[in-house]
Amino acid sequence: MAHPSNKAPRSADIYLRFLQLSEAIRGLPSLPPLDPLEERILAWVARAAQQGERLSVRDMMGQDEFGAPATIHGRLKSMRSKGWIALADTEDARRKLFELIAPKLQASPEDLDTVDGMVFRKSQPDVRIPWRKGMGFDRTLLGYGRFEGDYSKPNFIMVFVEVEVDTETGQVDLKGVLTTSDVGQIIDPQGLQNQLNGCLGTAGLDSALFEETILDQHSGHILNCNMIDYKTRTFADLPPMQHVILETPFDSHRFGAVGGGECSTAPGPPAVLMAVSNAIGIQLHDYPMTPDRILKVLGKIPGKSTGGAA
Image (cartoon, rainbow, N blue to C red; front, top):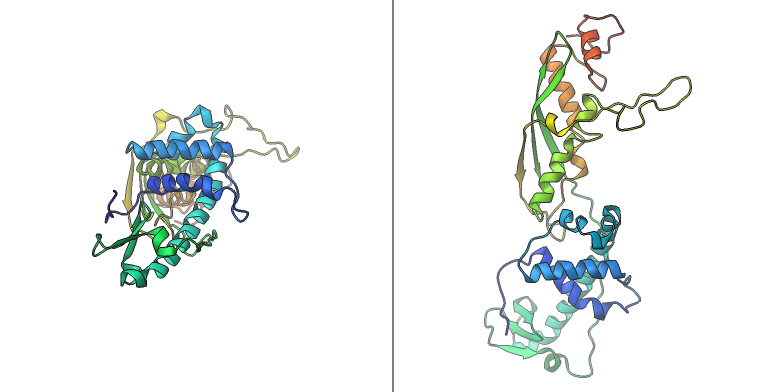
């Protein structure tokens, strides 16, 4: 017989419960059915939960049996909505069950818990009653739930950078990056670190230094439309990175997490622009800050300057 625990359930444990409920909820008209791929993903998560393993989205995307990463990403978003609905209507049915049985156990609904078909007092676990006896054979409890996204508390992130500017060549080197954020409850530490490391990528820090789409003003064609002509950073050019992460669960989200994915790229370019401007003493306004543009601002080569007053 399982006994109540004071530990908060892990997300994998909740997925496991969802998997156990899937057979029962599949036929409900109000709940979108699980497709075969979603069932395979849930089965994989359930096995990991039973073995005490911790999974990440990256782990799932590395499984060939699940298909392309884009397919898995879409399924996980769909499963999140369905899982949210399943948990919400299960919690509603649970609340109704406790309200029904509370008078029989001479307790308040808040003092009750249930494990393995038994309802018992949290303060006195030996005082218990089976579901079927508490409800009776002629009663049905139906819980209702819906998915409602809460966007009232978005995440924010700060990025600090250290740059070195060679005023003779105009070369800008990124020497270090520090990011800081509060992502709420951390569910996948490795995945979170990878997301924050992603601040270097396209539309991130490197768009301030050398990533640029060059357009032919006469034909309208993009001139660097492949990965040979479009400059990107190599692994050898990666700067040291540090992440300072606070963990304050958000009460507006089921698992207390708000994440730190796409927002990690946004503050990088202006941070680099401000750092370079501070280094040379002239306010810059345009991306990317390539050597020729730096030298033009410094007045070392001819051309129209895009910098402001010192």
